[in-house]
Length: 290
Image (tube, rainbow, N blue to C red; front, side):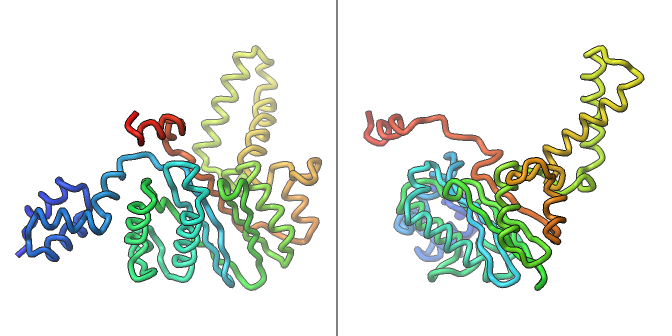
């Protein structure tokens, strides 16, 4: 019988996951040494050792199928691996598999079957083969109605990916708006979506700044409101100037095309993650033991 303490000991020795350790012990009748070799043969022990390393490069991809779309980000340690065809194939395989599923979170997605294993197992295999930490970081599924269109856009070969849902049948406009999202990085669709606490915090900051400038106190509310509108222009898609018609707001341009923006998603690879500080020469020297 495989005990919890045996699983714990094997996990501490290899860094592999609990489930993989249990499988290894079951496959080797509880022999710890053989279980360690089993994990190494599967590439799991090697992959586990890389989990503490930083993987903030990689690719994002947007895919559509009928009335459903998905945006996915998969990370690698270096941009060199991210440009490798095998890594690109992995990203597309993950995206296609999740798109064809009912998965709603990462736990469900990692258990999806693909190529005789699971997404989690496939990643472990690729880590062992490619030699870098790889991570399926996140995904978002988006649905639309029959009278709406998707507008996917990829920038810098998948470093920034955006997807817009547009009411109407103008796919070209949807792509243009998606390009706007990629370039201008809005946080919200409109003013109504901005949380009140964020608005009040911004108002306080702008008021204090105006007071320090020694501006007329009677005019402060008007000045602050004007500057608050500038804030909305930065964070709200509909309030931004349209990149193709800079004198027109996105809202007015879309309205002139008898369309309406329903939602958008924007992924930038590695955003919010710690970046590697090492350069390529240092990495090569380390690999060669220099």
